Length: 602
Image 1 (cartoon, rainbow, N blue to C red):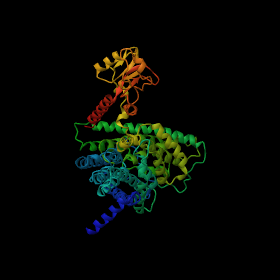
Image 2 (image 1 turned 90 degrees about the vertical axis):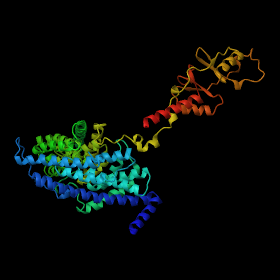
Image 3 (image 1 turned 120 degrees about the vertical axis):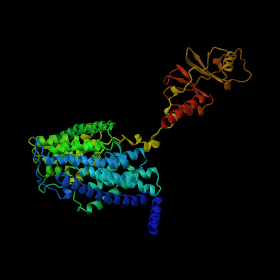
Image 4 (image 1 turned 60 degrees about the vertical axis):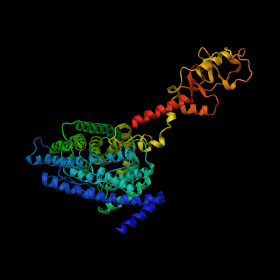
């Protein structure tokens, strides 16, 4: 215990010393947990896959390259009337949904759905705070959901595990809310970078995935350290092999400028289908949330049953799906065209049922697999017209473009795609297709908790919020029943008006047109009040302000003047008087806005 206390004290000293030491140490710690968490969830998935799919349902799915790959896996035969043995598949997925639902809603309801979105929400709205139990519950519930055959990914849970540890570390060393958010974001990058065997892409993702149109640049350096550390630990278990392996004879690259037309089409189709994916996902999510007559504990089981029924006919929708993508990589014609097109649709529906019902898992893997199915179909159709582009190349590009578009993180997903497949020669086609899909998909994003820019994030509200006085316009504050006199009135008549109104100044006007300004302080002693006219002593260079200016500007002008009031006009250069504004009107408008803001926050 004394040894641990000494370590804690030393780390705490380094954390307080400055940004460089702090983020090197914390980045390494977060990366270690990300790497170990990736290993843990990887083998948890295999354990529950063995229990549910292998032993209970009697089905074995192909694996991806990180597990050695299984080219030549026999394709299941399609049949309208499945055998009785296949009825065990819906049993497996339903039980998985039932167990997962109990874990989630009994112990940590925030772990429902895809974990990355929950981590994004914690960054923007909870100062990076994640409950201690969340990583464990997320890992178990996701492993059960995916292992029993649910259509979900392991990346989101891994990200939430590492993000949760980042939040925990920040609390242990009493760090600021800002540092907690950065530590949590670093965990997202480290978790995804390690489980995907893509350290550079994962590090960039932690900065990009929080926004639709912006970056959290402060998280980049800690994320690089954490992601490399996590990758080093997880990759050691698999000899640093990429997620997907490609045939030795594959000759990938950009060899003909005409292929850009094909990749442009890939990007357009990926963007359009991506919109359908997002809309289907959130429509089914809303359907399940409206099932008030059904307990939340049982909704994931209903989603699991639906997936199981689909899987009796199309087992390709079960689990991660990476093994089926591996099959396309080894033989583009392994799947018939009709099946690939069908799998695009049923994979979207199966994922929506699994996660939208409250099941636990990520959307990264389903997005990649759906994109690969779509790419395989496009490749088969377009290969006769573009013989210099292989089906494998189109599949890889579409897989990355599809998820890059709907994740609103095109840059990092492009990098991750090249790392996952070692297809660096496809960088140019990946750029074109992914950016096209990003723009085509528009505001449709799979992560609902993303915000557009840093200025839209509650986490950065203090940095971008305008002062209250700059938000209140003059037209909301000025006084319409202002005191005015005629330029042809005598000073005696004008003073009578000022006494009645208990003020020291008045606007000089003719037919509501500004002529000047009368102030008692400008009247000389001993002047003949009965014979002197207002126009002889009034101020001609009157201070004005437009109705669309803000009260902060009005206050600034008044603070440099002795008049105490400004004449409000419709627009610059106008002499048409709308009213006046002074210190009392500004104070009242300011207090009114304060009361409004407090009412919204209560």
